[in-house]
Length: 609
Image (cartoon, rainbow, N blue to C red; front, side):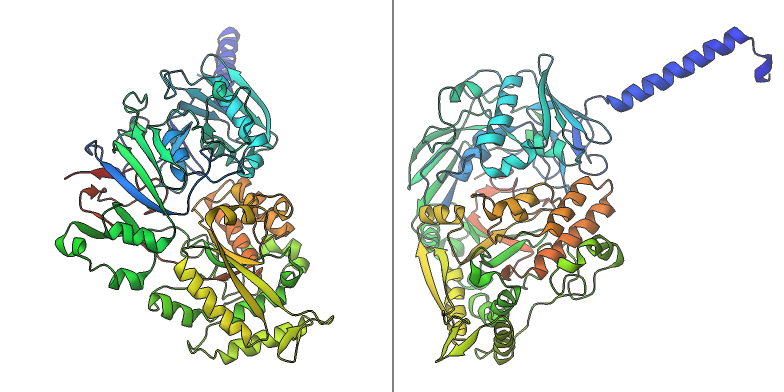
């Protein structure tokens, strides 16, 4: 039957029905049903009815204890503010977030405190629905008011790492009895995930108190553990909450298996290892491959009571090395920074400290698809992103930049010749054996390190001797962890040890690492003091990318800007972690793609005699 032969009334009903279906579909697209998880790109790997994460042992036994050793100390139990130094375990063990991250996927979250998440295609907003029965450790319910208060308090008065996301929230509101909704000032694909990972604190605990003040009052959280006992500078012990509300949540199955998690504090890293040998702590992470090969022949290893485990990973190398503070005039010129890199004899340092076992970090995101091949010119898509900023980019950003490679001898003649030429171009010259500027001021600076950084201190001493050949006087200063925290927060250093672990899903946090606000705002991770509009533009492109390919191109462009910026003298990285531990400590056979990183130890480990 042709359309014109259908009675008019029936055709009208059909039109109305079609419009209704279209309207329902459009409404569903604008207001999708809450989901069990969310991925940065694509869909979560696990279905709504998943039983546990793939990288856990869902039947892991409960009980026992794990004891960590830390160098330094703590003087606060509030890890969410700038002031004070708090134990990492407070946030990790006692505080929960709305969603939890699966470290077997690049960036995917699944519900924890929240049973569902809702957002639109543009990700212009996000809404969370709290689980019924979610409770703080004191038995009080976790409410939408707690969530809203936590987001604002952290965004306004907390550590600067929370401020970037808070500034992008246009409205925050309660929805129904268990829901909260955040609408953004601009579409941002990462924002729903970032908010899903914000710590949730108890509002009532902080009424009438100064949230920014350092305190030894433990925050009340809803996590699996509570602070049991502590002595600042000596130890802190966390015990499993027997009434923890979340023990049956699928995300948590096979996790948080110990009855007690304890951190013992020691004066320096060398003492921590001796404490491990003596049985005072039960696990030790070895970062030196030469020591891994030679120092683990003590009786507990020989008897089998201590075992050695190697954990592979597929995450970016990140950056580790000696960072130069460009707020200091002495390091403002990129030619001076390149000279500092040329003078550093990596091959000698690596052979001396690591037996030459480690490869050198080539770029911030090397060892992953996010890293750019810095030895070659930028590929066309990357070059196209960088083109609007070409006049302000440092040499090598687009055409390619490689780190110097020495012959490993102490003389390093080629590197020192290159450094001398660069320093002369920047206005420095040797006068009576001392490198001076045009005004006769000598080239002197301080390398600030913490007590107990034995390998880094040794690397710095080798470097200082090399710099003397250029007429440069570098002084090494070591301080305790509290002094170091205070000075690094205020950027009160010339050069210091710098570590930034980077994930497979970098996003808004990169602004905190490399954004211009960090030049003057204390407490950010922009220790080098860089102010590069191109870098911030690449970060914006990253968080607005709609496909993984667009995201990778933008990250590779950022990688080139950072590496060619010559802010850090890169050290080494490892594609696996080395953990020594008592044999009763076990971990699952499946290693997540992030390996021994966040979410691994102690979360998925267990104790079994």
